[in-house]
Length: 466
Image 1 (cartoon, rainbow, N blue to C red):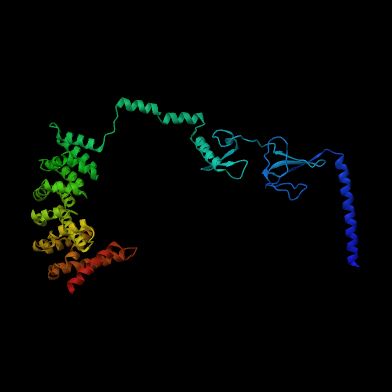
Image 2: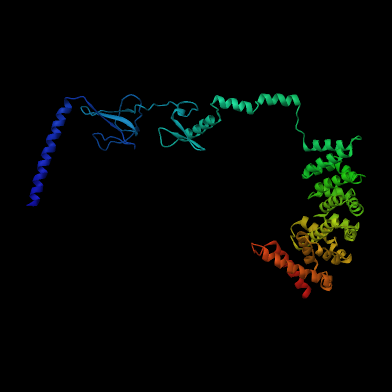
C-alpha cells in the first residue's frame, strides 16, 4: 500500500513540472529579455544543444558583448548572458577590467596592475587582478619595484641628500683640481726608499720611512719587489746605522719581508743578513732592538733548512747561549724567544723527516736538506740541557708553557733532567701550585690551560722516575 502511494505522488509531481515548463516556454517566445550570469572562478563552458560538442578554441573577451561560438571555452571571471528566445550566448569582461595590449612593457599598462605594500621594514608587490605573476610580469615587477625604491619622491628628502652628499660632477672637478692619481704599492715603496736616501733626511724621517715601508712588505709580492728594486740592501745598510731607532725599524722591516717568503729568504742569506743579525744580537744593548733582531732571525730560519745550516756554521747557538749569561731581567724575554725558536726548529725537522711521500720530489729534497742540519746534537753539546730548565724559575705561565714543551721534547736525549735534583724539586713545586690553580678554576675542564701544564709536568716527572 505504501508503494502505491509513492507512485501516485511521483505522477502528480511530474505533471506539475511539465505544466510549469510549458508555461515558461510560452512566455519566452514573447520576450527578448536576456539572462545574465557571471562565470565562476574556474574556467567553464556552457553546454550546447549537443552535450558532446568538442571544445576547439577559447573565447577571447573584450569590453563589448560578443557571441560565444560553438566549441569555444569560456574563461573564468566574465559576464555571460543567454537569449532564451534564440539560445545565443554572449560574454564580455567585467566592467572594471581593461585589456592591456602589452602588459610586459616596463612603464606600460603592466604597472597599473601592480600594488605596492609595506609593513615595518618589509616591502613588496602584488598583482591586483591575478593570483600569480607570469615570468615576464614578475621580471618587470621587480624592475618597477627597484625603480620606485631608488627614486626619492619627497622633495625635502632630495634636498637633505644633496646637502649630505656631493654630486658626481663635483667630485670629478675636485679630483681633477688635485691631479689625484692612485699609486701602486711599488710606487709607494719607491717613494719611501727615496725619502730615506735623501741626504738631508733626518733620523726621524728615516725612522718614519722605514716604519711605513714595513706595512707594505708583509705582502709576499711587495717583499719580492723590494728585493728587485734594491730595497733589501738599503734595509741591511740601515741595520748598520749608528742610530738604534733606525736599526730597530730596519730589523722590523727585514723580519716582515722574510716571513714565509723563500725568495726573500734566499736573497737575504746570500746578502749576509744572517751574519749581521747575529752580530747585532750579540753586541747590542737595547732590549727592544734585540727583540726585533730576534724576530728577523726567527723569520729567516723557519722552514728554511739552508739558513738553519748557515746558522750553525756561523755560531748562532753560541750567540743564543750568550743570552743566558746576562743577568738583566729584561733579557728573560730574549732567552725565552731563543728556547722557543730552537724547540720549533727541532719539531719542524722531526715532522718533515717522519712524513714520507715518495711521489713528492720537492718534499724529498727538503728531507735531504733537513738531514744536513745537525741541530739536536749541537744543542746537547753546547749545554742546552742545563740552560732550558733554568727558565723554570720565571713566574710566568706563558713562559713556563714554552719551557715545559721544550723540556718534554728534550727529555729523551737530556739525561741531565733526572740527575739535577733542583730541576726535580722545582717541577714538584710547580705541580702542587698547578693543583691549587686547577681547583680554583670555575670551569674544571680537563682541557683548561692549567690542566695542560699539569699534564706536561707529570709527563716529565714520570720520565725522570723511570
